[in-house]
Image 1 (spheres, rainbow, N blue to C red):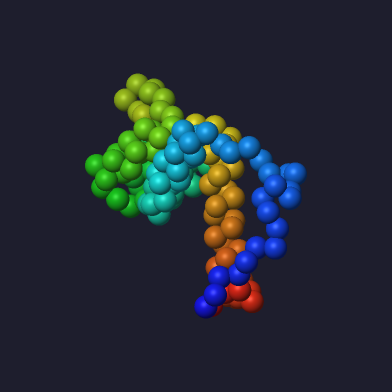
Image 2 (image 1 turned 45 degrees about the horizontal axis):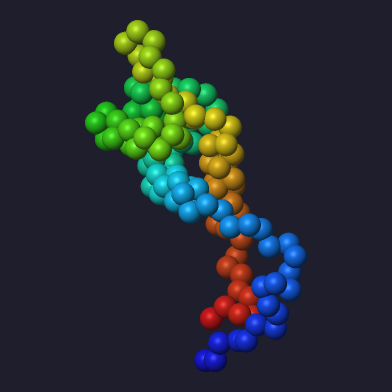
Length: 125
């Protein structure tokens, strides 16, 4: 199949945004990679409404403490969650509203995709 020939040139459009710095794009990709694991996403979803003690997270996800700790470590390294110590308890929370918005938007979009019948456009094959 022949590739279509564009009918316009890039400079025909005055609304083209300036390119993002490569470092910003790479950092965003790292965030998405950290969230791109269903069990880690589950932890983020649990934290969207309030902070939780690590033992509460372990109980909610039904995994071993060491497994949950590894997942939490990755989320903390990427700046998606923060930790607070209170005596013998470690509490985790989303690092800020941006993370909550990312999680909510991703999950809402996934739910919409799951609920809608598969749509095809003319260009899809």
